Length: 474
Image 1 (cartoon, rainbow, N blue to C red):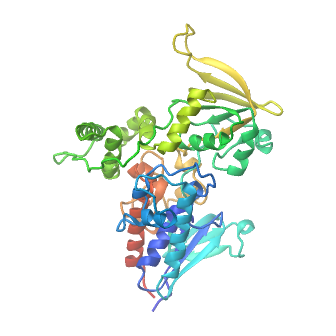
Image 2: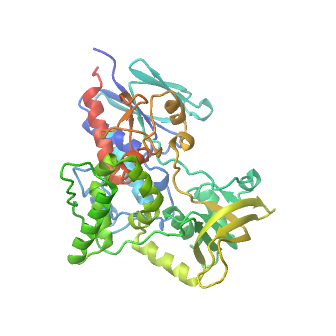
Image 3: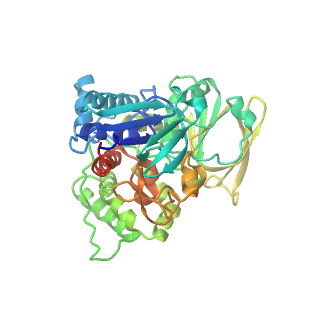
């Protein structure tokens, strides 16, 4: 008999914790799970640690179960807190974070003998493949239990979204003074801006919406300008659940093209309209096939989509909760919030403010040709730039070193890592890895639809099932 198999999971947020939960639920023989997280807050990832009740889920409660075989699991859990919770409710993300935390605790309490979970509060800075496993090297200065090297049989990479880079160089002095906030999810850094007079938010996605809701929670507060190259802000959900139906994609034996996905959307839009729905139903239905079709698309088709349709798709796909959409519209109408198609030319230190060069299109109806350059000063700048777009450059340790060594390889558009449908990583030679598995946002370039709980629940279950079958037993 060999030693007990040891599975190391890098990242203790939603994706990593769901792998651990599925391992503990399904394991029928001894296994040790090592869950490593830099924050030490196991279960909820960054989006679900918010304390602001206005930071709501952007998917209704009926579709947020952690388990594919129990679709009402979260809704039933919510009804223990609030019996009146409907399937189309959008609870706060903080509440969902508590759900994830309790899932981990419940799975640990119900695990079979010999199945153990070891929570490690630390940051993995290097992974050294060794024989049939690997050694996780932790930053000693940030490890609470004194352990700096952990030997495991398999590594699950669940590090979450890659942070986006600043749009232009930012003076370090602005960061040190707190005038430039590089992470819009840093509530402690964002909160002081509620007493400012003027705030610039860079980015116009859902993270921007969170920042705006935080800054405008009081009647008094700053005027906010949110900018991005597109100037497009998320659409809002309507009350009630969308009518989701798997699209019928007729390929007649040929590989899919991006035109096939566009045609499927058009067909679903027509169907939903006939049945009393609209584009929201079509967008949510397309999610059921996007992953498998995207995986087969030519690289050129993926790049064309990213260049021409991605932002339009995102604002329709990643929607605000109805309550948030209503307040967002009120803020726009009042003039307290402005959203514009503007890019950043430069950011400079202006003492107690930041001086920003803004480059945008002229207002419709004016006779000013070309782009318009404006220089404005703001009390605070908050970066809500979204995920990074270059896995080799932007991803955190230990991923770049593993790519450089050939143990992992970027996907064909360099958004994330190449991976098989069951989560096994692909190395530089194109060989399926026996040592590494990947889930969550790092699979975006391969499957596109991969960051939502709906995808995480089946990805985590598939990885857990494969590892329990493939790893040697003690």
